[in-house]
Length: 338
Image (tube, rainbow, N blue to C red; front, side):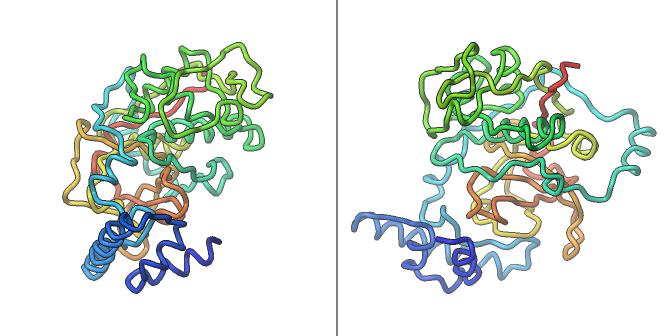
């Protein structure tokens, strides 16, 4: 189904029939399962309508997860809660210099307009969000370093299969900072072309000596000589500074029950956790700004749930409140080894 038809269906979510939903999202059910999925869908309709009538800074909508229970959603796309840790942390300079540098930053940034952010991908039914955050950051920073035309799409599957020694658990979760360190010590990361994604845990088949010009050769596509640069926990001043001056940043946060319904606007929550002990989803911050309607500052973030979710695969989260712990687990790759 085309994006235009899908958009037209979703703009009138409150009036959407289950039959329309099945067509829009190419859903196929057995007769018995269809009864259960319809019940979850109707609950989602009620939840979305109630939220949108509440005067919030963001709007909810129907999406590919609207036929799932909360537990099914969590087990399908969220990783197990991760405890953030840092191997080397950096922050912005001291208070006086920090104030001056922040004043010199542009009021908004959207790295998509520079052509360095790769397309929205789909992690499928595997809690591998951390691998997509990692490859998204690498693809962007490689494009900034070498030019967008020279930035290949990188292998999430290699990280799922091979990074276990760096405190990652494949489809059960991990952290981008650990993934960057794995890539440094493994000698590199394959391209998606040579080590394609299968959305499941597999035996590691990375071959550091192979060529990447042949499909499924599992060879090196990029090196990360410096590993991970981790920002100081909770420091949104550091986040905005490095986001503006260095490029997209891998971030992680705690997904609350209402986040699955996000459609547009500036997301804010009173029920999510705001600490580094419960992050269960990793994504990629690609910009920041201020919403002209609500006046709220926000982080612009790329998700890995396909373009059918959210605002064409993206969302905006309220900034400078460490919303859902979004500033507790931030890192970017050091491609220069400095």
